[in-house]
Length: 117
Image 1 (tube, rainbow, N blue to C red):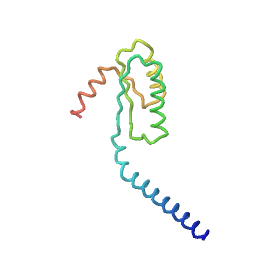
Image 2 (image 1 turned 180 degrees about the horizontal axis):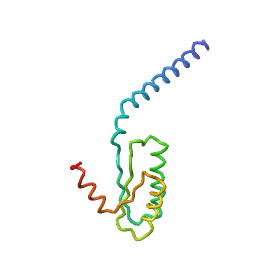
Image 3 (image 1 turned 135 degrees about the vertical axis):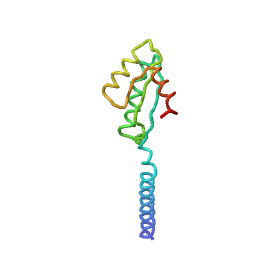
Image 4 (image 1 turned 30 degrees about the horizontal axis):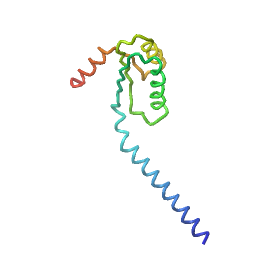
């Protein structure tokens, strides 16, 4: 009786593993087509010197080590901050190619020209 229970548990776990492998292969074959274009994230900030570095590093961590490989670039548009938000973004932008500090006018031009591209 104990052998029967152990075999049922073993085969159930083996079947679960096979199903997970099939799901992973399906995910890779289906969703890798999205990597060609990618996602460009625009973040508008104003007076966020206390929070911006943690926010950007969280996004970078997910892009580099997580499953957010579809994100190609994060554009941070400063809305006229009176603190050191822009300096922090520029410093992080020098270290990582994914982060690009832009002015609000540049961001607006990018959005307006989306239909033209």
